[in-house]
Image (cartoon, rainbow, N blue to C red; front, side, top):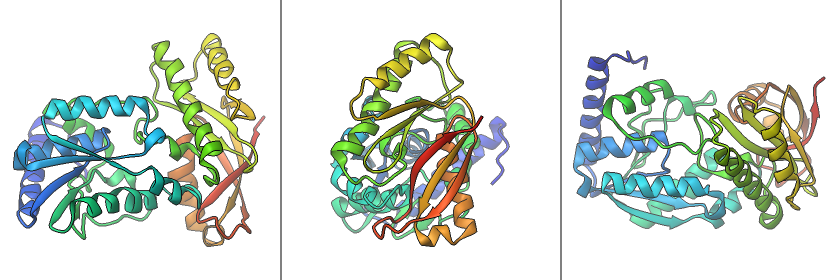
Length: 330
């Protein structure tokens, strides 16, 4: 849906979504918003409150443990207090880690570690509202309503959602990881989570430290993460910040990350990269799957263009992919 960004169109759009939520929710016993504190779920929560009244809406966050950024927790606390809605935190770290053992898989995590966990807790007769939208697609789109889960922003892209939030005066609080996807450090682990105490610890410590250094310096950015790659026996940290900071701040970042014992090597991404990617046979032998994996999942992590060289994996436990090595392009 291409939405004009003028006020009359945005007003009409808000009314349409509110009526849709009201109509769908009338068929259910209760309504729960899967709430991450990001822009999409914040707009969804606001519209749900407008449609049903805040006393008739519950916000629910699945707690990823250390993989949920400290700043995300702060944002969630602020927003649920701002909206005045009931909020429930459900433990989800163990399910998340189990999913991640087979390699990076955000979609499976959403289904199994988040939506299934919320459904299990609240039971049948519950409508779950999610923030899925057009910008989440990697080539294949889902559906707007399925098995008690409704995505009221499904037909909108990020630009329209941001315009709607601004028009409605909805406070949007960012972590500073990414302009589009934020809220889980484990998505920066571009290999299987074979050992949470080694691979998991590395991706959490590295990303918290990077965000801390940038926040302390007051550095505004569109992208900031540490992608962790390499063979399972070592953790190679690829530091992505856009726009690229000046030399003094770069030095502080690299020194801070190099002090972490969980990282074997720290590389500042300051130009194009070539990544060597082992892929599950189903992905390796499917050209379209490889295309969308690079375009929709891997490239958005990086501050500069990446070229992926795919190799078939012989690891039967690998469900998706594993970035085993990196080469800086000259």
